[in-house]
Amino acid sequence: MKISAWKQAAVALALCLLAGLTCLVLLTVTRLREVEQLRGLAHEEQEIGLRFHRDGAALILDLHSAALRLGDGEVNVGKQDQYTVLFARNEAFFRQPPVSLTGKAATSLEEVQKDLRIYGEQVQSWLALPDKERLAGVMHADEPFRELLRDLQALRDACGFHLLDRVSEMRDSMRELQWLVVTAAVVMAPLFGVLLWMIYRGWFRPLQEQAALVEHAKTARDEMASLSSLAAGLAHEIRNPVGALKNRAYALGLLVDAELQPKVAAQVASMNRELDRVEHIVGDFLIYARPSEPRIIPCALAELVDMFHHDHQAEMQQRGVRFELGVVEDASFHADPELLRQALLNLVRNAAEACSGRTDGCVQIEALALERRIVLAVTDNGPGVPEDLQERLFKPFATLKRGGTGLGLTISRSIARRHGGDLLLASTSAEGTRFELRLPRL
Image (cartoon, rainbow, N blue to C red):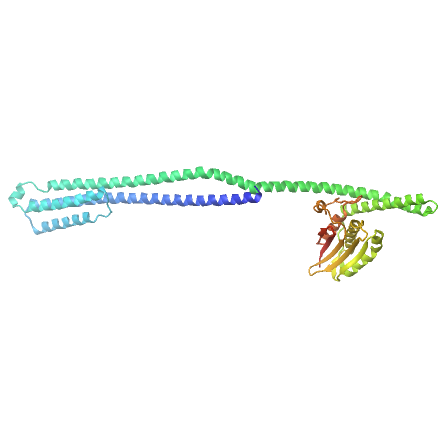
């Protein structure tokens, strides 16, 4: 799985877990609110039930006391009105209780209402008796009164059972909440582990690998810097004796008469060529190991290209290659002309060597002044760059030339990049190759 795929999977899993946690939190809050509502409702119903039983029992006792006072003596209007008011208060109290009753509680309340009517009827029949019979006899409402108290107690018990139902509902809700939390923990714990692994695989491990690559690159740069310093030192040490040998070879060539000693003259010429090649190689190493900073000055594009073409026309003729000027546009820009000449010389010599095997070998140089950049193009009609060499074309020591250093294109690209531009392989085919040196038009 690619790193981007690990990241996408981690983000998707994180979103799923976040959605699951959000749902779990919402369900938990909802359940807790339900439990809190049930608890408050149970407490309220308990208070109301106790107060209802207490107030109802007090009203019934007051009513029975008023009935006894009314029947024990002479019936008068004051006692009768007091009894009537208390009876009406009892009927109103039990007809509209302060709490909604269902089930057994509602049935018990109906029994209380029924027994209250019977009690009222018995009291009225008892009060209707003559005074002697009423005072001598037993009150007919005693049994309905006791029945009324029993029904009121049953009503209280029914409210207690209703309270127990509320408590049972709260207990069931808490059990469901516990089961939900435990199930979510069992399901999400492995998913959190997988998410942590994905985060490590998608983010932390690439960072570790990148840090290791950076450290490796730093070590490689340090080693390359050491090798470059060593190569520069060796090249410098080699350059001095090579220069002395060239001077002696040149002096020896002056002393040898080519007509009288042709073999010796040929050996001296070969020696000079080899010394030139060694000097060229040493020079390339020094330029690569110790690149100089460009000295930026105003330059005229057409003048620079024309002068370069004129200076190296003879060299190209010696190589058996036509050296032509293509489109040369004039423009002013800022650059180091010596470094640009060096970069162009590397490109032109590579192009000349690429088409040197042809009888119609041709190297063309162009200069284009675009809106934002300057383009110096070198084109040849050689066989093109092999495909296996194109990927490492600008790397040091990449060459197919016998005796070549493989540093020419690397140095030219380095010069272009030190100017803020670049060197590109614009095109290559069996009919030729085109390199473009692109520079910003400052």
